[in-house]
Image (tube, rainbow, N blue to C red):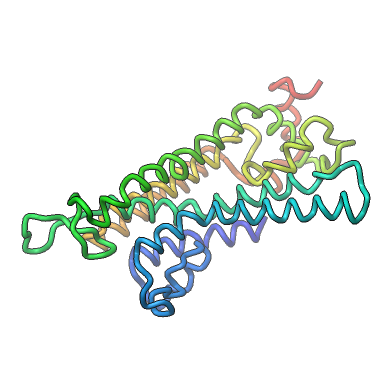
Length: 289
């Protein structure tokens, strides 16, 4: 739990670093999986922004392919080398959980990269054209880099920026009673096997990273965190011409998120909610009989 809080604090720090352009703390952005700290243009002088943009957007797909390859390797080992016939896919739930955790960490970086394609602004003094902010090329002109990337950015916007939070919300809402029951068992220090957690054990193995930090009745709180990440990325796009105001808005978003979390008591179950305080609530939800 403390490790998770530490990482979340560093994610907030790296956002402020990126917005304020504090070069002395630029290494903090490694916690946001920011590829810019590796300076790929220096290692590969011919690397174009188009290729780098596609590489960033393909990170989840590449991770999915690696997990699939690892799954097939473990399946081959269990079936052919060890001769097993049962529990051949017992490792799959943990791999799915790792994949969705990776998407959660990458969400801010992917969102900012997608929105960069829509970040066009005029020059000073204006010449009647708008130019892409990440590379000085004209926007909204046939054959330009921005027009070429625009349809792919729209697809990535639907899949990553909108699709991932929508899928998480649908999955958690559909199984919210299992989430509540699993969080009760977690607060009591049990539920790590099928004997003590017969109904929600499989769901815990696969999706517990999406909800295990929060109270049972705050099963949706990861959506609030993803919304905070989106508004941070949106702030980086909308107010990049005024860094001081940009940083102020970003801090306002993080402060509002923190105040909302404190007001709603969406605290970590392991710390804030002992089992004896959860039992009456659980009975009210008709989860315990």
